[in-house]
Length: 428
Image 1 (cartoon, rainbow, N blue to C red):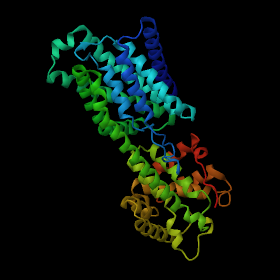
Image 2: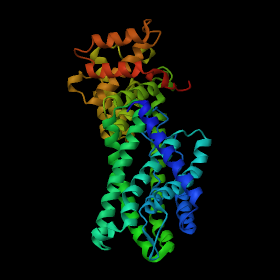
Image 3: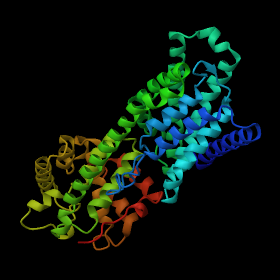
């Protein structure tokens, strides 16, 4: 999606929110107690999200879109959109009030993130408004007119309808998330959508099931059902935070280990971080999934770890211009060291195969080899011609050493300013 497409989505969200707020202020809040209960739950769910912007910051690999889970906020917002009765009495809040309540609650919860410079919070807010509006438009008119009850009744058919509608809503949210990420990063849309759909299969399934139970529970028991069904989602959210914290710590450990070659004077300061960041950008360009990008990032960080086993260090740590046999020996040493550190086996394989001819390499090893060579060749001490001359030399090596598609993907990333976004590590 082009940038104007993302602005169109944001504009649609703003227009919906303005219409909802205007309608609600003009006509008053229908069933204020119910509205307040759901607004409070949405706000609490959004506030429970923690800021993990440091996740991936070590090497520049950021998730495609802000995926910090907010299952409680999502479930409360969608339940309000699908709420037809409360304690046996029909509700009258309608589509526009649903949008207004969810928008006001999510905006109040987003203020701390926006104040800390979290611009992604605005896109998250736009997604929330659009997906809730979609669910409410599909449900509220049918329910209020009585046609939904005529078709589904109050039994299993109603449950099936709600689950199907929530499935479509989850698909809508994934499409919006991938579109906004595409506009913000320039990464290919297909892999972004695939990653979003894969994420929806996990926590999204739990949210959909909980929404149905909460909507039916409130319809029968009233608002007392909300805290009962909110506890499992809150515990799930806490579990996600713990898992994310563990991943952040693991990534920081790998990054610290990768700096050992810099501290020992084997490589130039920031080399591993630059190679990892640029490798992830190229991987995105080639459509790698989030898991493949994680393996690629770890392998890129550790690609020079084999130099610690050398008696005589490579001058400036640049392995791009070494004889093939020597480069392969260093790569094999690196693979052995990587295996001893306990990283996933596929990471060690990438490190080990990075110096092989590209026809025998997995995609990640091809990327690491090409990006490492580019960073070595672009260094002023090795290649006075700079990045353009380095790219031209890589193109000359596409017969054996560098895969043509990887080289051209690297060129596209650099043309978009990928080199400028790579933050070098601080020396020493």
